[in-house]
Amino acid sequence: AQKITQTQPGMFVQEKEAVTLDCTYDTSDPSYGLFWYKQPSSGEMIFLIYQGSYDQQNATEGRYSLNFQKARKSANLVISASQLGDSAMYFCAMTFPLYSSASKIIFGSGTRLSIRP
Amino acid sequence: KAGVTQTPRYLIKTRGQQVTLSCSPISGHRSVSWYQQTPGQGLQFLFEYFSETQRNKGNFPGRFSGRQFSNSRSEMNVSTLELGDSALYLCASSLESAGPYEQYFGPGTRLTVT
Image 1 (cartoon, rainbow over the protein chains, first blue to last red):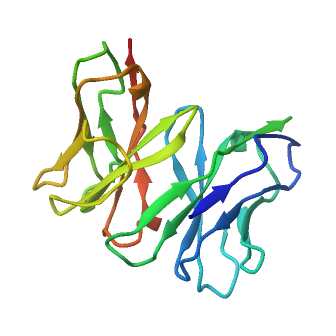
Image 2 (image 1 turned 60 degrees about the vertical axis):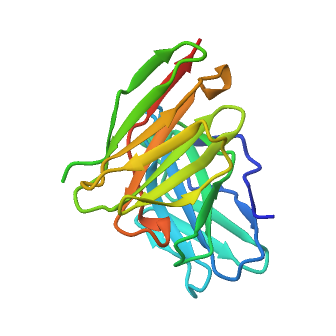
């Protein structure tokens, strides 16, 4: 069965340091997509970055990059030069199969990131 | 461009009642998905509507239903509320139904069942 695992319930990082949030997944579908979302205390989910299973290069969006290691089934989020505003819950998610009207999406349990000034 | 809006933002109901939540997607978006978020179960997919048709459904009982109107606005209904239905209900919209990777979420409706 498909599964997303985030093993870090909480993390504390000093401002301006880089941080890596771990995400491993399990699926038998060859076609899938991996996302990261940020959820501030306000509750709204904010899309950060996306990686498709067939994408050759790791996705990057500004300070966010996705370290995609297909053989290890991991999709870690790297935030460079962390800022106080990065303090939030972060969710890893997977959709499968891609480009299908029957696509499903599942989420990990989340990692609460706290940035120290 | 206005974002996804959800009404009401907060709701308190008693066990056994029913509730209707509303979601207005981003203009031009035809797909609307609903999610339930609880501390115990995390984020779970409820269902997705595209062009007024339910295209996908998660593993929730029939008490949870929804619909989508011709203007893409969507409503979610929960009948015979249970204490365990207390949750943050999130709505997300996207341009197309296939591949939800470009979803935009609303602020959510926090439902408390007493």
